[in-house]
Length: 162
Image (cartoon, rainbow, N blue to C red; front, top):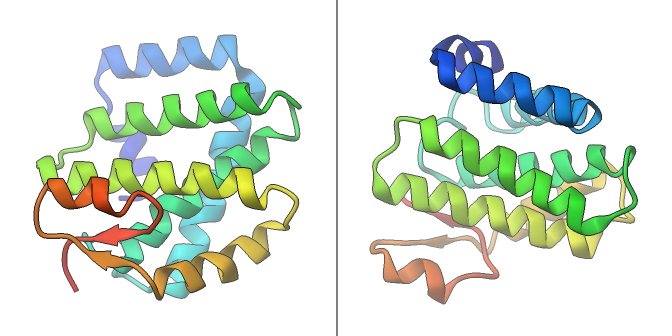
């Protein structure tokens, strides 16, 4: 789903929450928008028209999104906890209103968390290096079949379909 389609799909309460967050955290919100555009551009370049499914391309996109939000947010804060808390808050919020069933939602949350963990390890790298490092991680991604699999692969990207 494109950035603008996401915005258009929000109801009044969701828009209000987003607006309040913007008032409280305008710089982090700016970082989030910039990171979202970056992520969608890279995902479309690397995986044309397939990154919206529950596959490896989607796992890559979610991890890159979290890496990118955190990376952009570090331009406005040196507090790693604040950066990671913001990144988790905004991406978890996105998953709350996305029309996903349980397994795809768990996959997205898992890969979001993976991206935040990798940011801690890779924060000194450039955004374009994130892409290559994530592509390497993607080569080790695991196909999961049941909920219990997510816990077994906390340090790997996961996907649901080929």
